[in-house]
Image (tube, rainbow, N blue to C red; front, side, top):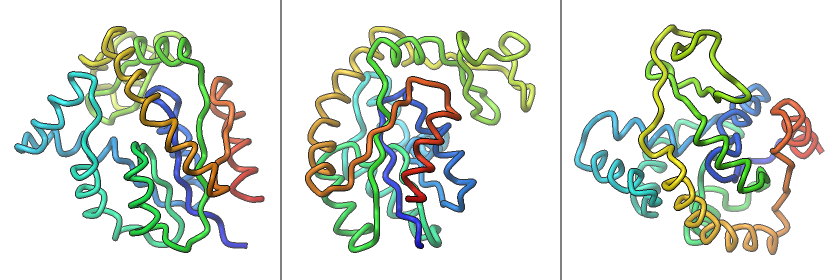
Length: 212
C-alpha cells in the first residue's frame, strides 16, 4: 500500500522538526519551509533581510514568498514527501492542493499542544549555531551548558524566542491555523495527535496513521 503524502501542521514549538526527522526514516523527503527561510536569511539577500524583519516582529512570512521558495525546492522530492511548516494560511492550503498534492493520497497531521506548554518550550529553546540541533533547557538540555552535544558549537537563544514575541506569534498562529484545520477536516484529511507527551510516543501515533 502506498504511503500518503504528509502535511505536518503545528504551532512553533510543537515538535514539527523532531517528528519530521522521524518520519524521514520511513522513506519520506522532508520539505521544511523553516529551513528554507533560515537559509535565505543566512544568505543576507534582500529577500532574506525582509524575512528576518518579519520574523523578528513576530509576523508570518507572506504566501508568495513562501511559495516561491517552496517551488524552487519541491522538484527535488521523489516519492512520498512531508511538508513541515506549510501551509500556514488557507490560501496556501488551497494552492498546495491545486499545484502539488492534486489527486495524490495525502493526510494533514496536526501536532496538538497547549498554549502554556508551547510558550515554555520556546522561551527555553536553544539552537546550535553550527548544525541547527535544537535543545530545551527544561526537557532536553545539552550535556555541557551552552555547547552542542553533536558538533561542539555554541548554542544560541534566538532574539525572537522571548515571551512577548512568542505570545504574539501564537495569537497570529491561532488566527491562521483555525481555518486551515477546518479546511482539511472538511476534506476528510485531518488527523490530530497529542504532541504534549514525549516525542517517541507522539511518533507512534503518527506512524499508525501513515501505515493504516
